[in-house]
Amino acid sequence: MKEDFEGRTALVTGAASGIGFAIAKLFAAMGANVVMVDRNETTASEAKTKIEQEISHAQILTAICDVSRENDVKRTVQTTLERFQTLDILVNNAGLMVFKPLEDHTLEDWNKVLSVDLLGAFLFIREAFRIMKPGSAIVNISSVHAVETTPRVAAYAAAKAALVSLTHSASIEGKPKGIRANCILPGAVDTPMLWNNPNIKDGLEVINKSDVGKPEEIASVVAFLASPRASFVQGAAVSVDGGRLSHL
Image (cartoon, rainbow, N blue to C red):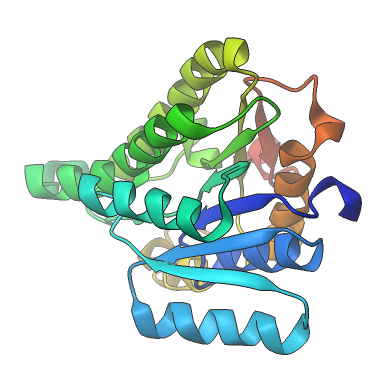
């Protein structure tokens, strides 16, 4: 599978920690040029160093970017082209959550979540469509919340459901361009985002250990969907949740 990525360029948003870090590390290990996109310069730099310490041949560029800002996204894509001359794989992973009862959600809460979890993906997809060559791939990281959700995360669940729909649209419009677009619906994954979830901390949502996956398990599915081995997979929404959806 390593030969599928050597010389190709993968851009991963929210790459400094959790699932995004695991995805960036796996692409680097398989020989891809990797653009690690994150808002925080310090954590992005530390994440880059961690990967380079383990993978001597890693070719990594960090890009400080607020995915909700159009100019940041354009600059990041342009910087990618200047460094690596191509963008072959786009992984929209950046996301955030707001935890409040529905009646307490504000318009600001909704705008905050939608601007990152949905519109950030749109901005990168739009720019990618303008420069990607046939054989390229887009993988969006949605969530099982797009299908089955829990209390106090209305904006997040709606954004992730809309991301699935955006993936379908991108797959339809990307097909004539030779660009594949698919998405993954992770379940509970062992990341700070999971364990800092107020619903879990106060017992409103109970997570069984058997339902918790590793970031690397999500990354491996991303790598498959981004590879030529998934050439006939287009517009799919793949649940990677250890079977958790079946009993939500």
